[in-house]
Length: 299
Image 1 (cartoon, helix red, strand yellow):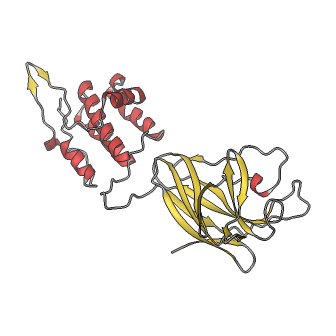
Image 2 (cartoon, helix red, strand yellow):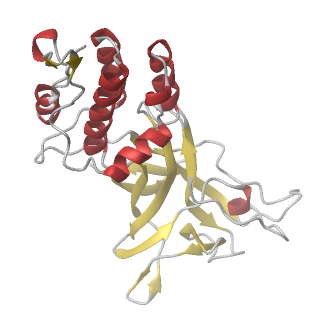
Image 3 (tube, one colour):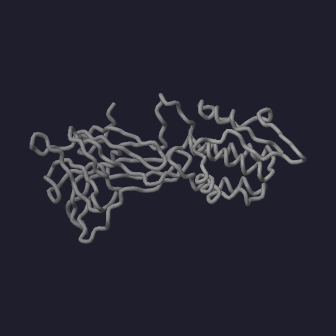
């Protein structure tokens, strides 16, 4: 039975080069006919509370070795919890080492489990390097973004609209994905964009509470209403405004410069979710020759 030494592994993780420990990195320590069941290099954040949480979420101590890999895969498919992914990874690796030693599992099984966790985590970065997010944020220029003003079952509130698309390009589920506006033209603030909704475009007598976030599995995307052209129902006709949600209700804001209402021509947004790194982008807002609202990322 191997005594798993995680020191080389953890050092490699911190250097952005993850690999499972080789056979040479493992040591066997026996005494009085028993194999010492100890894992070295316990992470500083690996407290009794962390261990209790991991045992509850991932009960490897009660799992036979042949079933361990399936249990870990199922657990990872549901997304490991935690916000500091580098620290969490070290905790998980130490926990796997500990449970493997206690269960008397083979080195091959342990290495497979270690690789399962490493493969699901994005590579850690040095302090000087920016984190790579699992989210991609794009402006959507939809040719069908014009709203007919006549013969509609519900009164329209806008004439045109533009949306922002957010996609999960990572390997794990991202929860509470939302987009906040940080700046409209030269006016700073914080406004939560609504998830795309017919309530943004049409007037309902009994509108539902507006949704401001969604959960995204790997490969999934969603859209947020970002800019609308007012038709005079909720804001000055012809002006470009930003829909936002406050306490579940939908509003439209027009930027004000020197006491005068203006149309939106520049929009800075922040997309975020747990555990993805936030993404901040600025879009230039304009109308195409055929009147479509265009969101073009600012260089």
